[in-house]
Image (cartoon, rainbow, N blue to C red; front, side):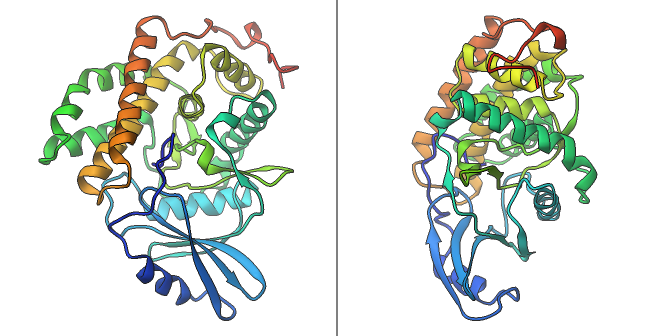
Length: 326
């Protein structure tokens, strides 16, 4: 999972030249192609493709990954997201390659997320995902909950010799605590990698890309990902929860939001450990891991202090501070 702040790079274990050849040979093109590398992605290679006067974005993923990625589920989620109007059109998928129609716009920055207008738009995006994706998704029914993802990484890092084995084991109590506090949370369809780098703004609407980890999990986790990766403080957290409450999210159990923030920070950190140990590494891995270790420490402290957000018990007790409750 590409996490904020992003020391963006391509996967050093992959060949850009070989990926360009693979992209050029895909059967979806209607003529000669021009392929140029794009920045972004910690474990995938991304390219802009021009063909017959049209533009596309192609991604080549590694054949083997230490992460809980199922390519059939990713393709099904991407196709459903495109049908729901959340994601650009899926043009081709198969053999580790994914091609989307290009969208003119800008990729958000982490600092954009706490802006009141942008926060409302992102909340709408997440509400659409939660409401529309279950009926459109026709892929494997995998457990994509935060506890399941944390269990995957803890098992992998604990079982195989690697430089992060001891560090991962020291997080065991925090992983158990977060999982226990999230027990009983409402389940639903989730994107599972919400951060600014996966959201595009074309000036009229937002697009959500990178559905590698999507599936049925805990919607509160998408909200927590937004908060963690946006660097939200307690005021921004409360504003986010108010927006979510007005868009059909369950607010009865939002005292567990601090636990979801901890679980999200743990997931991102363990992703970094696993990618560094078993995924071929990535540029600026030490800085990435240090940032996420600090996020885990902050989340543990906040959870111990009661979560840092105003207590929320019922939908009627909270109002959208940005104007309305819808």
